[in-house]
Length: 396
Ligand SMILES: Cc1cc2nc3c(=O)[nH]c(=O)nc-3n(C[C@H](O)[C@H](O)[C@H](O)COP(=O)(O)OP(=O)(O)OC[C@H]3O[C@@H](n4cnc5c(N)ncnc54)[C@H](O)[C@@H]3O)c2cc1C
Image 1: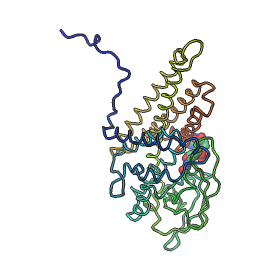
Image 2: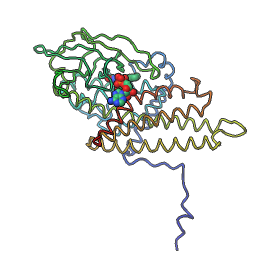
Image 3: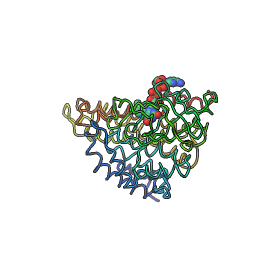
Image 4: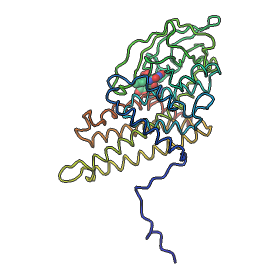
């Protein structure tokens, strides 16, 4: 007779097991990114909060191959799978600098994927290759002063004039907008054609008529630059068109799926980081003769947070697995995006609370993470828009 399992099986809470989407190679990549981020980026977080991070970060990350992890080697990428991008998004949170992580994510997961998938060979050589090398910086222009959630309400127009297009309009809240060499711009080319009247262009930011207006001040993500841009009679050649004329709306909706996926992964990682840091604090900080973590109410806060973080992580990884395997799981990506963003905001708020007054002070870093995190319920599609996409997917 064998020993009953109950006698020998004991929970090993310290054990960790790699998720099935990752391999040993991803673990090694994770370690090397973590070493770079903690050594070369995190020490500057406070300074960059004041000044925004320097462009040299792109060049350094380009040298290290970190801006092209999932792109093919023929375009100077690393030839890795989609999960390498998830690893990068997760590890960037260890820079303790949300604005930096966002500026980099715009380059790696918002601007370059459409150029890779939709671009001509000439566009890939001219924009994708130098962007992967960190020599060119891109930004993405969807939002306008009068149209954010309602992308179909944008007014920026591109009008054909012989071999050129003439672009007029404005874009706002554009991350990297002040530093960018080029913008992937959403325009209307046929206002009467509904969703078939949009087109994307790659526009060099040094062209006459491109005006970088205000540097916008914001609640968090201070290390990033956020621009209001104007386009005044900007002339671009016909080959500046990205993808198919008239299909820009569908192209940008596809782009947004990758953006939401990577944002959700970053939310989970940032929530985990705040949890770990706060757990340490709760074990050390004493009140009424014991560690605050040993009050049942605080213990339950940790239990709640851990459960939500784990649920979000599983949703993100399973959805990433589908995305990487050629599915187009818009409903699940929207679920992952809204759930991870809300969860992370709740977790950051509880972490700040558990830190007490210290949580409100800059030196502990929790207040910065709390401020930075709030954007995730707004950017790349608000909570309300995500819920609407999910609801509509059931025919409602
Ligand atoms: C720091 C920062 C960086 C950004 N970076 C970029 C960038 O690089 N490029 C870019 O193009 N954009 C960028 N954005 C813009 C961002 O994607 C938009 O702010 C977001 O999509 C919401 O649009 P909006 O601000 O116009 O809000 P609105 O669309 O005006 O929404 C206002 C409120 O109404 C709600 N609402 C709107 N429509 C509905 C509806 N149908 N049902 C229910 N509720 C609704 C919204 O959920 C929200 O609560 C950035 C924004 C910020 C704050």
